[in-house]
Length: 441
Image 1 (cartoon, one colour):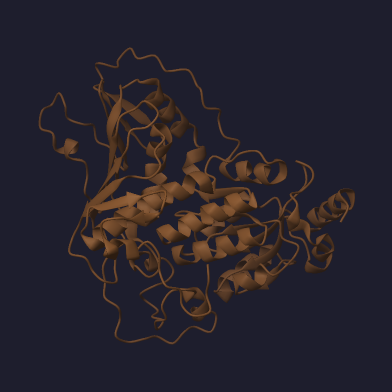
Image 2 (cartoon, rainbow, N blue to C red):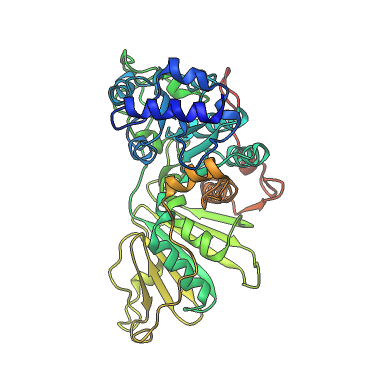
């Protein structure tokens, strides 16, 4: 369709949408095959397919709300109906594969449980769509690698949902670390107090509600009966078949700033500890240690993750001169000259007396135009995104390696180039999963 004609169509669609830019199926069909090229103007609206419409998806939908919602998809008809009230002209789907058969979608937003991230993302990329996917990028390390490689091969604009990456505070923390304010960093400790854990698979089953398409919710995961109290809306995170516990839930958010500041990618070795391993559910607490090699003039770095109430040993220090201030979830950076505590919204250089007259370093990282806006502009103009799959794929792989080390009780040795674990066949087998019949990556 000529660009000028499409712009006029989008203008009329936007006027008709009363606040949200939702294109009708009949009108949007005129744009086929729009996804083969990015929109021609920075002011032009993007045709979106929305995969996942509730819970975590709500914020992602708000992030792209001023564009055209051509099609929406959810396995829960109630969730789907709720969004359809705001998007009356968007076509409704339960199966994302059918949504991706359309020819009028430029980009998709994937906000599903972890085990659906890669199947939806990779299929969308292969079909030529730009993709925004919630963290972690995938359920397995192999899936994350395939997603990143597919994005690069198809030259699509991508962004993973580590929204805090766009915040000003993370930029200031990265600037401080790179400036040498606390000296060379050899250790970083990252912790989150929450936990997703525990439970046994129920011996009984519940009738599947008529509004829930349970088989589609399972997707590539092994078949199992539905139970009304066990899996939805969020407890899937504590089952290995669908999620990866607290580490998979929060690791990409909090370890992101460490990877960014120190230019980390894949660790060479990972070891982990926690309660006895359960075959089906994730641990109540976990400590994982990631050994990263020297790079670009800095020495090797050890990153340690804690969840479920575990914290860095430095918080147990009795010496008043070294006692850390009260601090919630965050990162403790250990430098040769000093320490720093940081979290989503702030930071503190330690010891405070040493840094009493500290002068803030000049800003070297521009403020973000917004996490979603970065991606939308990339779709339109080819500009970069800061959490593209090239970066966030490696971050996701690194995070998920902690679960592999824990589940096998092995100090795993990771060959990043070959995407394999070299010292344990059991651990290597956990890098990917067998999909249920009818599902492919």
